[in-house]
Image 1 (cartoon, rainbow, N blue to C red):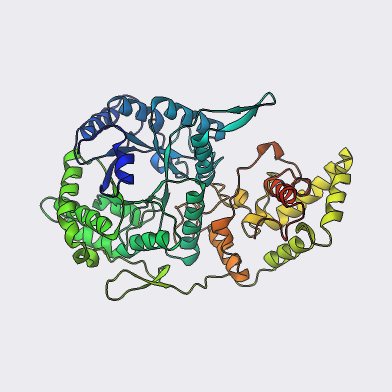
Image 2: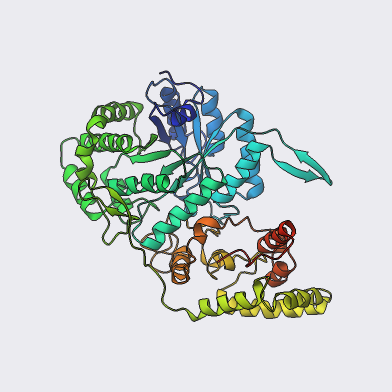
Length: 528
């Protein structure tokens, strides 16, 4: 098996091959030592019989670095297929679209779409302003349309682009403590798959049962998507940072950190233990049914990656023996399935779920208002629509009523007045003002014990709060079902109430479409 262009995609979709992707980090600068080392490493990987692709990170940790897209072009020109990490953090939708055209132009197919870590303070002049214009679900939807041949209008005439051939993937973190966190991850994964994701890469963690849980969840819900296990060659310094939450989404428990502390006392500073641990992770992933491995680590040479692959293949025939070595549960951690005591993995039964919010007057009031006014068959829906048509007939009424709406919604929901309201989609919590990444389709992977990645110990993840509210009313499945489109920024600072009733925002448009298709009002508007 000789590496050549597109072998990562071929390997990942071939049930007889266990695909191996090696993560490379270009780093800050254009022609520094690190960039030259990355290009050399990629070229050597292309000559390896054991490595099928190289992953190119996109400003990991929110730090500025050589563009993953431009690095990929050079790597591709050297005869190696890159898996381009494609973060939503730094680009608005126009730039994302332009970058995708550029990648398609040079022949790059494999793209890993991520929310992206929040910008670090290390940018020029301080912390950069985050963008997060689209989330991974929305990017998946757009890439699916590109692959079908994007249809659009230009100067009033219908146009259609030549179909692309992207092979898009996404990430998910099963290594979560709280039920609300975990269910948000799986709900969002379901939407990513429906939107067009072709593979999924797990986050970094060392709990074999959690990786098995991800595979079991995918099988249970017939998501039919290959899983790539994230294998990080764990050094003590990296483990210490992960343990304190310094790398969002990565999990290293206290017990694992203590073990690494002992291992670093060896003459080789624990190097051989690190390689053996990674090889056993490889064997476990292969044995449990993953389709491949995503191998990463700080300054690791191609020879180390190959050693892990060779050793992992040797161990994979007897992979169950090593399950006890990856038994690092988090204290009080929730698992989707009950434990199979015989194997130490997961059984077929689902765990009892009950992570719900106590009674919330704000949530109860919002649901009452929705029932009375927003459902098309409610008694006040038609009068409300007529009222907002009247309001918009007068500039004075529009401004006056808009001010009243803004005061009310800022007080109740901390509204940022985007005009394309997602309160109905997120249990009457605003994802624009209360999520630093503006995630409208589910949580990012960076939360820790239910707390926001950006404001740890200060602000709960808005999706954790939303799940708990939905659990109280039995509507939690909405997280996996409601596909929320991007914000229409043409509606910025306009009345979201008018936009809903007059069919301008995403929920109003969906309502109009539904009524048009069925020629009658649906039983209830979209959203929980």
